[in-house]
Image (cartoon, rainbow, N blue to C red; front, side, top):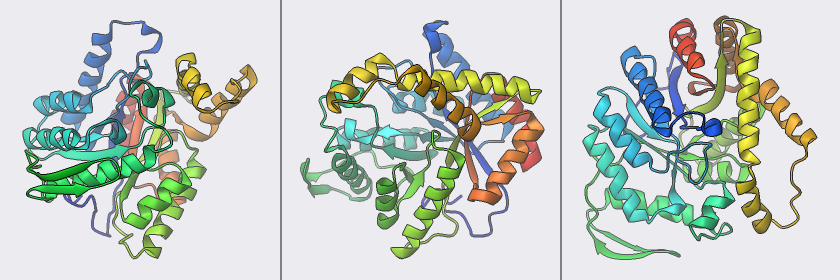
Length: 352
């Protein structure tokens, strides 16, 4: 991978792997420090194994779905424990930051890590986060795009002058500058057709989400590549990490049970009452999901979203996705620690 552009040469022959690292606290069953210790242990294994290109750190607020409100702080801790592994953000919730503070923090992480940052930025989709931070959901797309633009300009311009819809700066020297020049590789989280179309038209590389079905990811990826070509941007050799939930166990039946537990937790987190109260206020009339809808959502995850099975079956499924949808960078979100270990030790060696 070209660490500056996020692109690779057209003749890319092998599948690359990263880990989308959540910091979930299901049921608060263990002390929260244990959640962080286990994640850091996983990152140590990633560093030693050489199987993964990067760990991508998830940012969320006010939820046990992932208790990691600062990817910069967590990234600095990862930087101190590793020497090879790249450190991705998946994602920095750009509308929720002052853009110059965000530019400073990510640049600082790039410097102290020796130039190992992959910057992923996203708008966010949790109404609760916007409500608590006092942000307007309707203007969040515009704020997100302006903040990303400001961060990139702050990294590249010796002194920044900027006049936007939300921010105005005059002759500001933003320090430090990133170690990677002109800046770290950048990806924008793009899930909706409109977001994908905008990213393609602007020539941005994208991250693809872990919640769409495999078929939907394929449709979106094809639309993204077509949008790039239509806008005259390079298509071949562009790295597009595709996040997929993964459950691996010695048998297909055991893996399916892990997938079911993961799907129930994911669906339950998405419909948590603390999220619903904001969603209902911001989108009046939205009915609460009934039990049948929740069961249907769980089945959808297990059948069409989660890659699950024995090591051999998971390897076969990943190879099929390479052929069917153009998967070339698998951003793995393991649903258990045992899944991660089997993925590292028994699945990836079959694919590289």
